[in-house]
Length: 208
Ligand code: URA
Image (cartoon, rainbow, N blue to C red; front, top):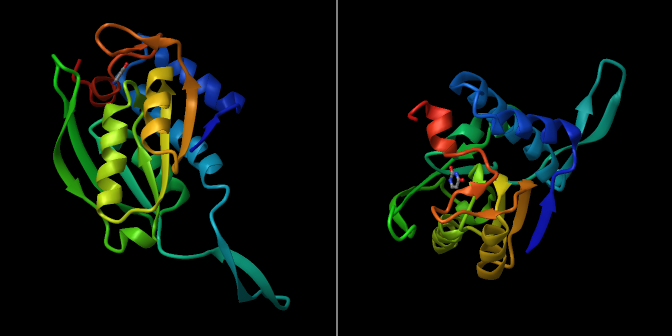
């Protein structure tokens, strides 16, 4: 698995803004989308293209367009939903699948309750999105579920990751590409990322 850490100053700046506890729901949601778009731009830099003929007002020319089946964006419910529109801003024709897992508050283990993926998933470039890669349990389970449905070309995007989550995902799924906005220090005893930004789902949906 390859791990890419984002270096663009705009991404770094926007991550700092969403860390602030005073950043309200409206602004938080907007910035999560913007970061997803900027990270998506980097993560999709290797999308395959094919040459097509285009008639400009001046002449006919051969130029590239994105090749293959439409992209599948797969948010991990619920916080991943906050990143979907950022990717769709780049690739409006992408299909959107959903994976639902919840974390047992005592054991922190993920339990699956929903999985709906676009058809021909085995042919699509899949981009799984979850703003926080914490223990990695949900991420590992999600990628396993997608592979069980036939998914092959998988990229995983997280805005903030803990070293524990990166290691767990790398170990379980060495074949995927991981994109991380910022690598934080560690998890605390409640499996929150430190310094992190708190509960991303609560902050996106205003349920604090
Ligand atoms: N999920 C979150 O939303 N925040 C964390 O810090 C860890 C997991």
